[in-house]
Image (cartoon, rainbow, N blue to C red):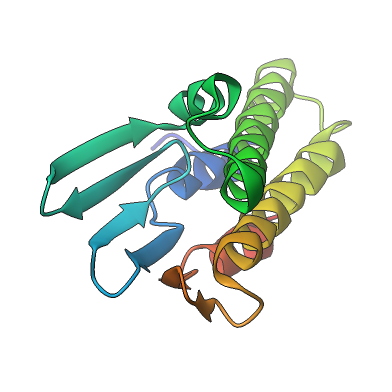
Length: 148
């Protein structure tokens, strides 16, 4: 029976972080509902269903389609996704080189990603995750912080 390398465990956990939902949210008074993962979000409304990848947020901000507080929140979302991706790349390097030198750096990027997702939620929905724009339940953020 083949043994799993101890350096593979952080890499596997980081991959799993992309599979768990980060946020479950409702926009307005039920205008739309959705679930956000690390690299995309799924939005369901009366106008139809949307599958939005994280880099589309950059297009929305750059084109001016989203401005103000929402643009800031989406920017934090993009930074959080990039932080998790960077941590994944570092952990892949750590696993392939069999050297744990950068393991703490990857952990810091993972924790930073979790904090940025939390900051994005607070920016968009308020400190208590509930406001006039709707509400969110950050179910995956604690998991990200613990894995970090």
